[in-house]
Image 1 (cartoon, rainbow, N blue to C red):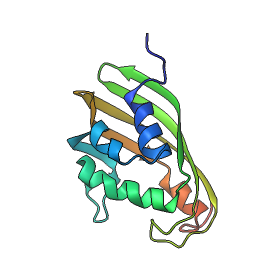
Image 2 (cartoon, helix red, strand yellow; image 1 turned 120 degrees about the vertical axis):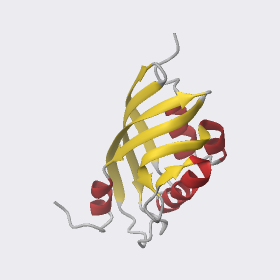
Image 3 (spheres, one colour; image 1 turned 180 degrees about the vertical axis):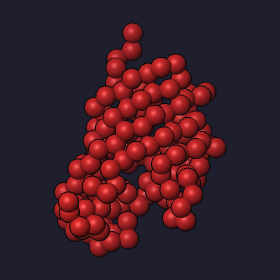
Length: 141
């Protein structure tokens, strides 16, 4: 039986986000994958590596030390459900706001459907309001 951390979800967050290996986006994400819950600059849901890469680049530029820890992941057939915590320091201007040098921590969860060994569709919910409060884009609660 595989280790519970040997999933495509863990591989995605470790390689693409924690290690910043953008080359892995093409290997792990289908060319026409739908990434629900994450939007491009004009408000469209992201599709495929070409659509995902600008978001990845912006976040990695804003948070070069970004770390995503998968705290729970379960599988049902070709679908994985995950819960994670994102941490980093706002050191760059990649999100359109000057670096605040503030640490951030926010939660996320989602589902990933896998086909042919790649992510074919993903549904994401991240606490971006919490992130925006921590870097000063929204007033605190």
